Amino acid sequence: MEERICDQPVLKLLRAMLRAGVMEDGQVRRTVAGTPQGGVFSPAMCNVYLHRLDRAWDDGGGVLVRFADDLVVMCWSRSQAEAALERLTALLADLGLEPKAAKTRIVHLEEGGGGFDFLGFHHRLVRSPGRNGTRQVTFLARWPADKAMQHARDRIRELTRRSRLLLAPEWVVEDLNRFLRGSPGDASLLHDVA
Image (cartoon, rainbow, N blue to C red; front, side, top):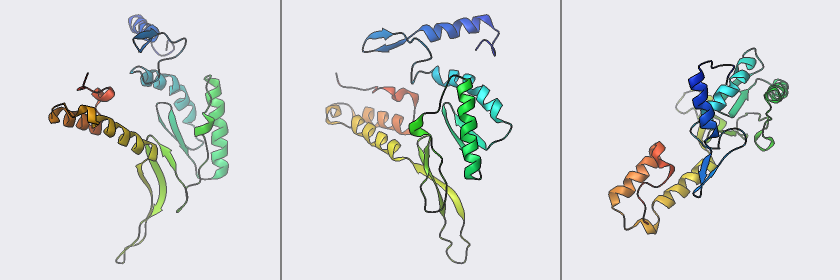
């Protein structure tokens, strides 16, 4: 951080936020390194830290699309993808990081083939039917990933569980709408039964 920010009061605030710890089951737990998973400060720190990866990648080797610590590299050929993966692994190693093996793979996008999940969406190459004289078009389609859909179903079940029948219907609808809109206040139930 000190490479990019020279304002001492801002650095002091950042240090305090990193040392603050996280509350779990009524106890404050201090992290040894990094920021707590899911913390509001974590994405900002991730983007500052991985900015070096973005700068190093700018000179070619496929198109890098990154959102916080999730990324996809789009390439034209398998050999270019293999070289990009090797380069990405080396660049991350320079930052003291490594790709997560369970999530790292090379996917050949082809019509009727598999796709990949990225940021809660499944992406797959499909061809439009081409009806009534219109030509067929191949495009990258996307829809919510199975894991994201399961999370949504579980959350809706939680928000509409039987124990909440005593709450005013407006409160239940408000909580549901907050979740469906993706509002930040959805981290916990606003209206709950003690």
